[in-house]
Length: 394
Image 1 (cartoon, one colour):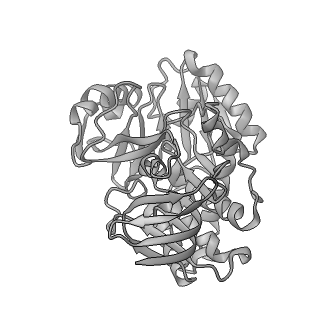
Image 2: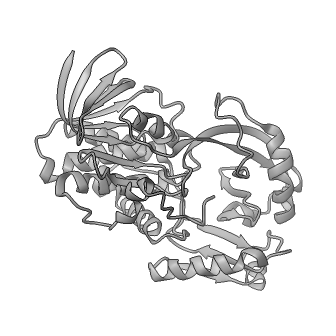
Image 3: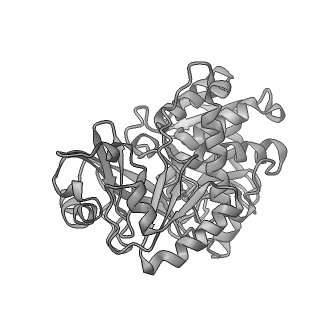
């Protein structure tokens, strides 16, 4: 069976759904057939569904700050964009990033970049921390960065679902199918082949498949250094929780351990050291020993109330990890003129996906970025092995 389309988007998580949403509303793409492909009808393994949902402006790369600021603006105007009942459960409790002497200079340098971008982030000395967060141990801390407004967490599956629903109402076709082949000639993508043998000719192809984007790009003969990296999130119950701790920001220890409130519980985690990655196998396989050895000791040392906790649940999800520089790849391929990518966010895709989707829609319909200049995040740096490193990956 053969079909034709103007635009095919592979991946219906928050990035692909945002791309579909903004394409469907762009006057430059009016009347075009847009097909949104998703291999998993349940979204059970989708990173969007397994994200902790953080939204922060505390990055070291100006483009990342701008992307998060754009998504923040969308969240604040969700009802105008997505309907009067739109609610993505944004909790604006902030981020608190802690630094020891070893990391103090980097934190201050990052803060200078954030301030230049208009991010409302405050630097706090240990004395300030004691007064503001009495539940926090300041042992070994030199400085902290605190996002008072415009940071917190939200519900990524709800945001993605609202955009997907709105895109479909505007005519986007959602098809649940696995892409098994991508055809091309010297300078263009021709189309995709689905698992049932159906081929869809594509005027443009967008790769927004998260952790599977690298293997998808390989079908087109395009090297893309993106792979699934498994991350664990633990739900803990604290027996004696100070009331002030329930209003805590998402807090990041110098060790990389993080936590935030979640209802009556807390969620927490830590990215493993490079070279100590867990196997990217079944997501139901949870490493509870990792909590005992790598998360809880640092957590209890930083928040004395956490000395007595129990794990009541846990889950795992995938980062779409860019092994070159832990930064997203957003833009068109320099040789395949109708191939576009929005992937490789390395843990910050939920918060930047909506803005990245808008950027891809601009590229396809306008031929250029019109909202945020994301040229530095393009594929060119991949082809040239020229990293643009993000120093604040959590």
